[in-house]
Length: 400
Image (tube, rainbow, N blue to C red; front, top):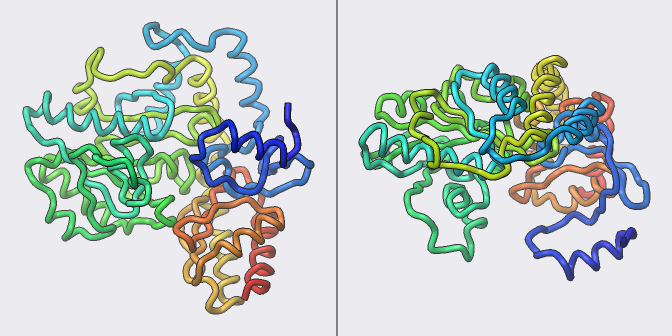
């Protein structure tokens, strides 16, 4: 097997579809909030697989669960009852107001299920022809044909038309625009409490509550995409809970199995009864191994109070970054986010800053050209935040 970075990159070019703009870094192993490249160099992980390994890499309790379950049952399909799946369903439903859950493999699949359920609910339960789903500019909901159409960013849609009909995008945080497109054909509104790919943009509480109120008044389903913000990331178990919201449907994935492919769509009983046997399915979703791991992930998050920890660490990090903004006038335009989903918006394109930070041993994301996006493990230590803040301060001065 090829082992050097140069050999791996050469083989990758000839063997794998070119769908990723990969970072100039190969990862050989990881533990906690640390990544190690092929040469053994250590990096502080401030991305956690894009909000996936929220418990840190190779968490010993998760590793033990994988070993134990792999020796008992991995997959038999959803044709059979599985105690691991039922245990997970009960645990995840205890975290929220919803009554039913559908397990799948990814965030895009979870959002697909939400869109299908919304349409089927209106058609079969309400006797309505409503089918349109309204989303917001800057949103990101997935890469399938339906979910990329729902996504409010044109760059992900190039070359894939004709796209499915039934999706309407309105400006971000504009209630008047939303009210203007809602009609008898509107089945649902789908939004993110904080847009991650859109540049870490938190929606104002009054807008969120206004959307829910509008949906209730007009008989429209209120759906929230919690793929990136859920599972303690923002300082509560689900981001919508911070604002007293009760979506009819919401979706989860990413951190649900701490690195294994797992997604979920949750709904109220009223809405979920629109699904019936054969109306929707997935081969791998909610298998015994994945369910057992996800069940343990939620148990650890609750036991270790990771929502509270995310809230406290997020407050500390934002304060540090705002201090840096004061020390580097004109370089940082904004510091925003909630809990451990944080965005540092630079005043100019940030590729050079991001590259220098990577050279210094810090892995994070650059989105929307100017926003340094941080999604570290929820278990990250304060000392790592301080190390990054120092490196960012140095980098801003070096690139001034």
